[in-house]
Image 1: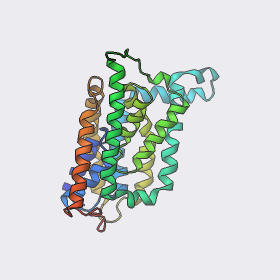
Image 2: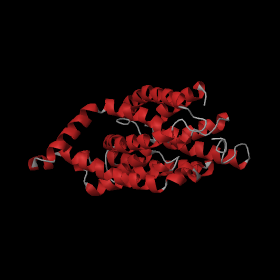
Image 3: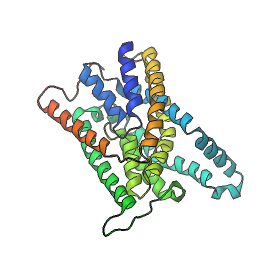
Image 4: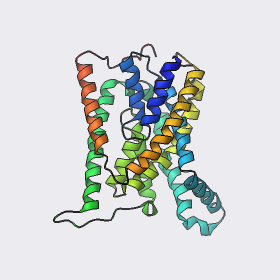
Length: 290
């Protein structure tokens, strides 16, 4: 991998990680369209450490408060009813599904799941799911002629059941094209949470999974055509760009809907199907050399 490729892929990772459009799919597609080798699951997981570092910094006050309360709750019974302490447990519980499935499906994640036809399918299907969830949220927020405005849930109402459902939604993102934020935000909206609450918990829930995945894949960095230098460079670029994107996105969702991302996903998935169907792109473009 050249330094130019690592710069572009790091830029793509930073731009797409927090948006509900799937960063892993865009890294795969960028390489396929450019005629480069597939960067692979290890490169993707490691560069996500960069964007997750942006989450750690952006939500640093929330994270410090949650971690502190969680540790104190281990010895102080009175702290166990504290919302922040409970959030610590909920993040742990919600991380179990992706941890189990990530290890169980490792070979599929690095192989069959990277087929461009599957990516096109998940882009379209999960785009439609996000669109339905967004419409339901909008209906509750504005009401209607025969409907009253319905108050949606905040993170203070998050319990073990919903936390585990969030975790299952996050685990779906092991398939490129699903999108970690897209799946968890859709799940949150369908369970009745506000857009801001769904996005905030989505980002907090991703921290253990992404950092653990990146650490696990470190052993494979530098193998094949992807060396350490370009991987680290791409991770740094992803961090810088990712921080700017998350700051913008958290402001965006307070007043805007997710429909622009829905349209983008459906159009991109459809175009990808057409290109593969016409033979312009091989469904395994770049994989053989990767």
